Image (cartoon, rainbow, N blue to C red; front, side, top):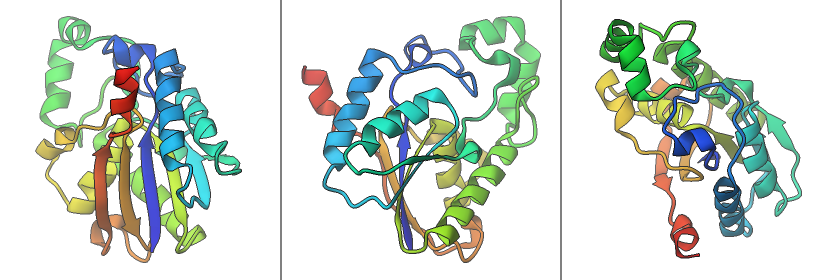
Length: 212
């Protein structure tokens, strides 16, 4: 089986401001770069065969920081980019419910079938993330694959693997530069596979960051 190290990117200013970020290209903060370097140090002795990042600056920079310790080129994985929040990107929760109350409520009630204006559904997110994992597992069999992505795609992986109902999608806390590990052979669709979850949202390396 391939072992996937799923990493959420380091902190951005929109993370700090609690804005819906989606596919907007927002760079890391200095804190985000420290987080990425700390994770890189944690993983320096880990065997990593392939490194992917979604095609957004915040994931690419995080991946490049990690890749320095492994001598690997960062490959882009557009299918692992964040859920598109459409015209809500750059807005806070309070701003959205003030301007789009009915649309937001409709989306919250059924995010697998409803989408933000000009955005995408959770169904679309889960389908593209599952496609990437199957392709990567088959392209790199029995490899150790690090993928720097976003909270949404990592939640999607866990939700599909566990066949969870939609109410549980948002229950996974995925912190900046946290590590979620799964094992998957790519022989069947993720939802029908014998994949294993090894760890979820492991961010113990950030305890050091908080002390300095």
